[in-house]
Amino acid sequence: MNQSHEDLMKRIERDLLDSYDEELELEIEDRDPSDQLDGLGLTHTSAEKQARLTYFRELFRLQGELVKLQDWVAHEKQKVVILFEGRDAAGKGGVIKRITQRLNPRICRVVALPAPNDRERTQWYFQRYASQLPAAGEMVLFDRSWYNRAGVERVMGFCSDDEYEEFFRSVPEFERMLVRSGIRLIKYWFSITDDEQHLRFLGRIHDPLKQWKLSPMDLESRRRWEDYTRAKETMLERTHIPEAPWWVVQAVDKKKARLNCIAHLLGQFDYREIQRQEVVLPARVRNPDYLRQPVPASMVVPELY
Image (cartoon, rainbow, N blue to C red; front, side, top):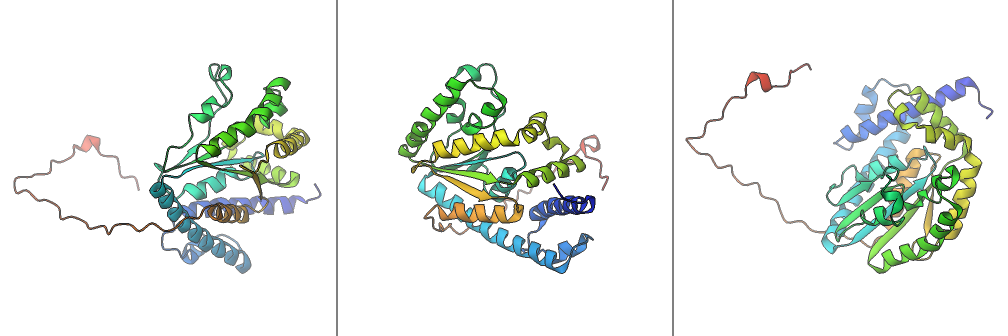
C-alpha cells in the first residue's frame, strides 16, 4: 500500500465517525439529524456533513419500506431466507443491523451460528442450518451460512476434499428444494478490496470498542487473502443458479453498500402496504380499593446519572 501515515490516520478517523453515525441511527427519532450532528463536536467538512445527512434520510426512508415488507411477509405468510456472505470486515453485520433495526424480531430474526460442535460435525452438513429455516410469515437473515464450507472450511483445511466436492454437488439441490418448498432465497456477497480490508482491520486494532471483532481466524484470513479469493471465485461459479442467484454488493463504501443492498432487497418482492386496524387506547380501570405498594429501597438501582 502506498499511503502515508497521515492518510491512514485520517481514514481511521473516518471509520470512527462512521461508528458514531451508527449510534446516531439508533437515537435519532425525528428524522432530522442536523442538530445531532452539530452537537457531536466532530471535525467534518460541509460536504461530508451533507453526505451523512443524505445517507440518514435515505436510510430512514428505506427502513420505512422494510417495515412495510415485514408486514406483508407476515400477512401473506411468506417464508424468506437471506444469506450474507463476504470476507471478514466486509460489512455484513452493518447491513444486517440496518435491516433489522426497526423490525419485529419475532418476524425478522438473525442467525449467526458458531463453529459446529462435536455432535454437529457428525450430522448431515445442512442439518443445523435447516433447523433455523423460517415458518410462514417469517424472515431469517443468515450472518454467514452453509457457504462456510466453500470459504473458511476450504481455506483453513477444516473439511476434506471429498466433503468439499460433496458440498458443491449437494448445495444446488438443497437450495432448489428450499425454493420448491415456498422459501424465497436471496444470496448476497459483500465485495471489498485488499486495501480496504487492510484498513478496516487497522481501524479495529486502533478502536478498543471493536477489537473484539478481530479473532485469530480473522487475522489468518488476512494472510491468506489470495486463497480466499480463489475459494470465492469457485463458490460463485458453482453455486450461481437460476433458482437462487448470487448478488454482489460493492462494499468499499460502507454507507452506499447498506443503501444499495436494502434497496435491492426491497426490489426482490412485489410487496404492498398492509392496512392496519386503527388502534384505540382503552381507558384504564381504576378501583377505589387499589393501593400501590412502595418498592423497598434495597431493590432500587442507584441513580448515578
